[in-house]
Length: 227
Image (tube, rainbow, N blue to C red; front, side, top):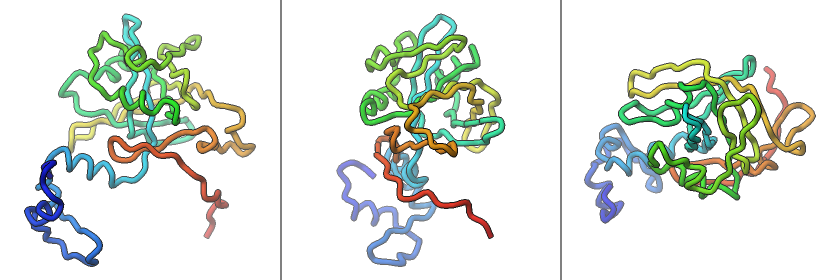
């Protein structure tokens, strides 16, 4: 949808073929999705999967230059071993994060809280490889012994990972990057006796679409479901 185009005109132009079940709701089919302007469609589709974990991934290249990138595609893959994955976009341009992970196999995942979300968002800008996002945004790199990637000092929950696998996704040229958690750093008062990490107490934010940042509020922890 063009920026000057009204919603009414836009909906008329794409001629939705899906029956409107409710006058207060909208329905979209494939032809309607493909008729959307590229940036509008990206915002729309990126909103549909719901709230997402947003993380800053820290890496370092062979010359000791630090890189920091924001990702909203981090997913849990298993607890034994402790695996997390994230989606890497196609290699149509140089991917500094991926290049650095290939270089030394280490990277960090850093939760974002209210004090740093604006700086974290700025890490999405396309800085040249020689310029560190840490320096550009004012975030502080934190290096720990025997680990070859920087943590974000201001982050409330910091994870150190080692690269384990890359799974290509042929349908759109992306890849699932899999890493194993080898370090965890968080505040004592965020960890419950049963191992539950209180993300609300930590201040970790959630994301929506490509530019929405949200606080969270726990409704309830429920018991293990049994049939």
